[in-house]
Image 1 (spheres, rainbow, N blue to C red):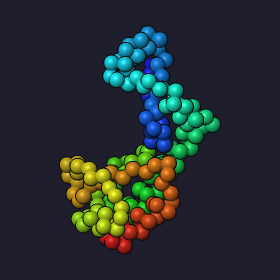
Image 2 (cartoon, helix red, strand yellow; image 1 turned 30 degrees about the vertical axis):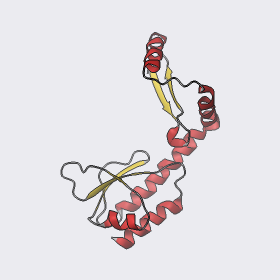
Image 3 (cartoon, rainbow, N blue to C red; image 1 turned 60 degrees about the vertical axis):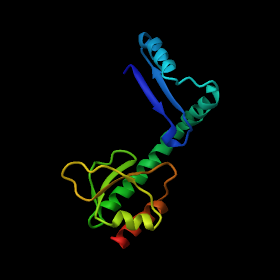
Length: 152
């Protein structure tokens, strides 16, 4: 591995992304491209402080694991709701699911928000992208699952 892209935005940091270059022959070119693309913050130490805090004692791993656990609970629960179909394997904190007609509108009316997603060929229903985060609680997951079962 020559380069590692590390971002902590999904674990709560603000604009804290790092590129670690392990191959010294690539470092100068990566630095030039970063500057040319406008990714040179004048007060980088404030952003970098988030990276230090996020990496210390494995905080970023604990926060990412929480998001992934929530996605696992949510995807398992959705798979048990009649008419809801997972259309991708859940590998992290994103779930792509097809819902029966009208269920998304009913859930939206009940206060839930969704990211519409284009349905892949051969997939029927309304497809949404659900994203869990470090702040997603079991109560959040349970509330959506209960509403989906009740409103279907």
